[in-house]
Length: 484
RNA sequence: GGCGACAUGGCCGAGUGGCUAGGCAGAGGUCUGCAAAACCUUGUACGGCGGUUCGAAUCCGCCUGUCGCCUCCA
Image 1 (cartoon, rainbow, N blue to C red):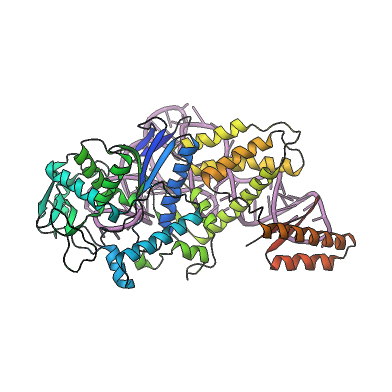
Image 2: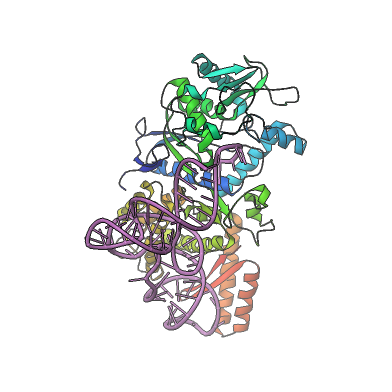
């Protein structure tokens, strides 16, 4: 596509992307509730939105990317009866809730950093925005969209005629089948909590006009997105499972508080399964990202690098479900390594004398795929299509006269947008030393080979391989590679 | 029960009313002291049954199956 189109959950179709303010994009992505280790689901969601942000910037937009950290209000059960997730984990680990928040916020970013996910521009914490949330709740009460009952404040769903527009639910018809055990004082079973009264056992609680309590889960996103992105902004992203109730409630709160459209484009990534099954603690297949990175889990036969996981994810579309299996990861890993070799070869080449490669066509092919709702799978296919023949040319010494220009664009795309190429660690001292040593070893081995002393030549190769260095003999001499 | 999505060659996975996705694996070959890599050649797939159409894997209907949401989850 010539112009960027995104699939908008609100309209259930691809729409031309037009930002509210020319050249600027405000984007909010639902962040993690920090009470446990990040898993594949987080990887999929945040990799997807990472590429979206990177691409928007590549396309020339100034992006403000906001991602919340939920450290209060997210309950284990439903909005009526459950326990706060962080409070529960704090009890289990015998830590302060804020220690839990800090611990898992740190591990979350650590896991995302190695996946190549850029950090957002702003990562507001829910507990750091209690006044903003209280203010929004007050506005909703004043406008007749919320009511207080005994220290609790609920959003009145019946006051919002648009409630259900995102998830496509019709609540009037559905009332009959709804669960019966609603919280005391709620006028309507679908009404959801904006503020909850806290009893003495609660660790996280704040003063409010309705007494001591804590905010409901949904209101943090409305309050914080408003603070950093305004009353209406361009893109809101998140996982599909948050469509209802979370995002539906956000829309209700924000649009009723401001009497304005909340978000122009709703983007949702699909779910992750493991060996065809939903991941869940009860199923015993909830593997954390760190366990993938280390291979330390009974369902894993080995470690899987973050870059393999990222590449695997990008080979499918963000709106498709992704099924993880070790065989699929292995296939992705092989393909990725080959692609990285091609990239390396092309990037290190110097301009030759052969006919120039069509850089514009390459760039346009990539853009065309990404403009179609961020089709990273096809974008990667474009890389293979261009790089395979180019590598042959470079290997044969038949190098295009403008390969450096091509390489520049390639780096912007592969490393800059897709994040699938980690720059080689040249320049550091150990690498330089290794280079020097290897030149020597390769030369000695070449001498042995010249004398047809295959025993020595093979012994050198085998022993190097055992220490993670792979030697490859080619027509122009031998090269080496680090394996892991 | 309500809402929604998906079903593609050995595997993963794009896409689409007529034109090669791509990757991985496999087979044959080239190169090579051997090995590895690379390169070349090779597969004519789209759950089942109907319908629309000159033509459907692509649109419509039904069926079957899988999955998700409706309750915490990215």
